[in-house]
Amino acid sequence: MYTFNPKGVCSREINFNLEDNKVKNVSFIGGCDGNLKGLSSLVEGMEAKEVVKRLKGIHCGNKCTSCPDQLSKALEELVVNK
Picture 1 (tube, rainbow, N blue to C red):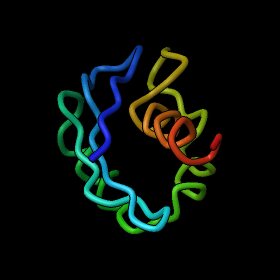
Picture 2: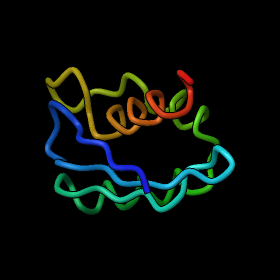
Picture 3: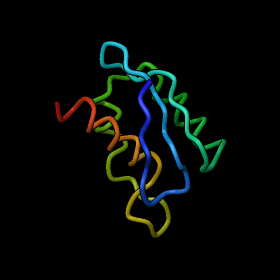
Picture 4: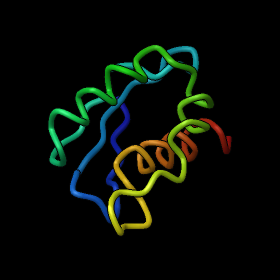
């Protein structure tokens, strides 16, 4: 289980597993519960690079980031940039 502490968003923590570079068991602590459960369900089993490609750069309101963007940053740090 990986844990990432997002910055600039309502969620305080993102937890997930990686199995063969596929994203599994994503959960957020804090944030918009229903939306983040939906996001977690949508990325389940998806290749990490594809999740980054789809979520990177999404903004939330007037913020320059979002919970989906922060998930992409976590995956970039652990998978894409290694």
